[in-house]
Image (tube, rainbow, N blue to C red; front, side, top):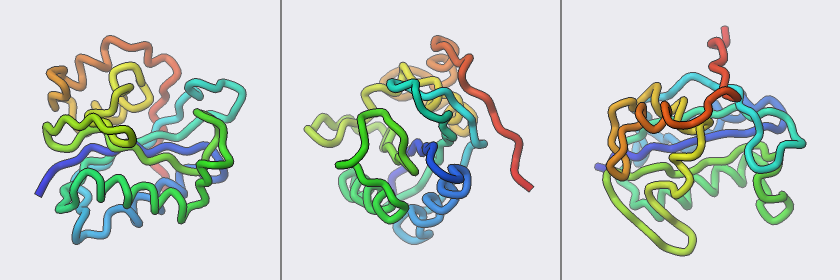
Length: 163
């Protein structure tokens, strides 16, 4: 079994509900088991600013799936929850986005899969929730909490738990 760190986000519709449904679909308890879930965070849009804020979170999972199979599962969940990559603009609004951040200590560089995630260390909207569930995790030689301290996290707000 491997441990993977996964980032989820969305900003169309009830994003918190969509992310709950995404986690439920992604983590079947058999091939992908949820180990930890961060709080939800409201975050400023990244890349394209003329859109609604996002809700982001991270999960740690234990999985028997390969990285490629885990990516395929993530993309299937995105499609099932209404994401149409061919119709959206890059970094634009989306109901759900599921990104593999890290998979054990594996390094992968392929056209459609790079691990650890190549933009992780510049994204406070991933590092803040990730630091909540894995602050001491080393990714590419950097401790998550140290990486968070080195980025501007002013657009990241931890949301209160829902009733």
